Image (tube, rainbow over all chains, first blue to last red; front, side):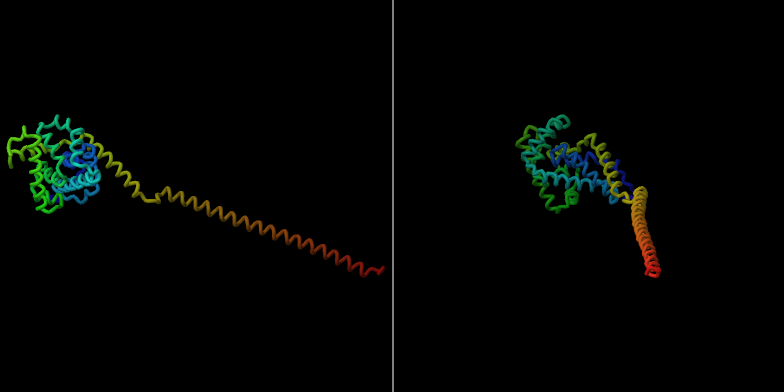
Length: 172
Length: 108
């Protein structure tokens, strides 16, 4: 920890807004809701700024709160996998197609159909490049559970990709 | 890490946040700071204190005036009663004098 580290709210927003927004977006598959969650997360950061000890701590804290807020939002809305798929197609399909390769866009769509714990583990693993230990710490879950979610989620996503995207998937 | 996982890493790159996110956050933060400042402001600011003192003085003055007015009326009523008694006493004295004079007159 840097002893003279002074948290600067606007700088933290600049630095981590895409991370928080992307986590919320991939967890909820709803751009409006993701923006709302991102705002709430940063407002909570503002209220807890005095407790943040370093930039790394801020990053960890933001990831943790973003994931919890997203899970809460999903629970509130009781969104099912199939609904998410439709919503993802309707709201973000075109934007995703524009921005990313077709495979990337469709992988994101398939991700939205996974159960929430597996989706959370995969998003933290492949978006944030976290180790299973770091994911366990972020989600406050046992390591074995996280490893299980990662394996099952990856297996399920691979299976879905093979059945839906077999023209793209080259390796297995 | 196999090919599929590499594809996942590419697919799950961070997305840029909406450009309006930071602006909305700054606005919301400012609104919350205003609300917090409003809530934390002491109830008795000097203006409120001055207004309270003035109101208290006016009320106290009004009560004092009512008490003084009541005392003045009581005093006036007592004065009237005493005057009436004095007049009655004088009339009785005159009557007694006349009666006494008639009693000692030579016709009796």
